[in-house]
Image (tube, rainbow, N blue to C red; front, top):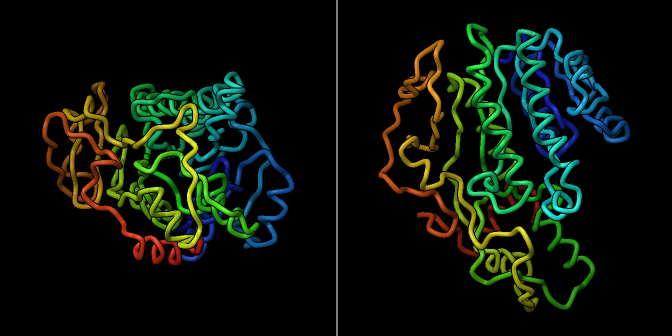
Length: 334
């Protein structure tokens, strides 16, 4: 599907972008892979590792509509991974968060439509479901924009979808590197916000593979949610440092005890497949079918029960300490 295609990834120097690029180069023969991001140093460093003839590095900001339009010329597929994602930083810099996460999404959509892009997938987060912080609220707004963009397209062939998943093991700014740093510094304890806290757990490679598969599955308008195991944060701490005591510090502002990826209020729109869920749009698309099962790969989904909620605290699958150790080993973050 990606052979001889031009692919652009916004925020391409981040954890996801690097893994996505390495996977694309290993499995396919793309015409061009464009890494679009703001930081020239990160691009320079990434170019040392990914210097194939098809690689391109564009300096730019998703807030810059004109630059976004320039960057998407001749592009077939777009992955929108650029975002301001640190919850406290978003609360302290709300206007900046909105400029990147909401206005940036608008610019990506506008540029994709203007340049005849075939398909766009935007990365979302579990924090966009029933959001209680500004970061989650901006990502919910972004999700809504990308879903609605399929109506904005009218008869245009460009299609937009969203991928929403949970905590990526070992990604920058997440709990695993935080714990690793404390362990390396010989800390006398690990801080735990709440012993009941749970999170969905996914490796970077699983996230990349899920995005790639959904380029094949999508009609446009879907929010794709993978079925993931849950982890108790206290078990993660025990898996990483069995001998270190824990100190309960309380839930931080804007933080949830458990995360949700499919809200109960969306249960009437949610379809369950073998390894994922799809949240269908609340709006009707005038220019094409609104039936999302079977999907474009022929996979059939079934409606979930009314009131169903996909919640990390009530998930059917939890990793135990031994499984967390193995999961982290596979993810390369022991």
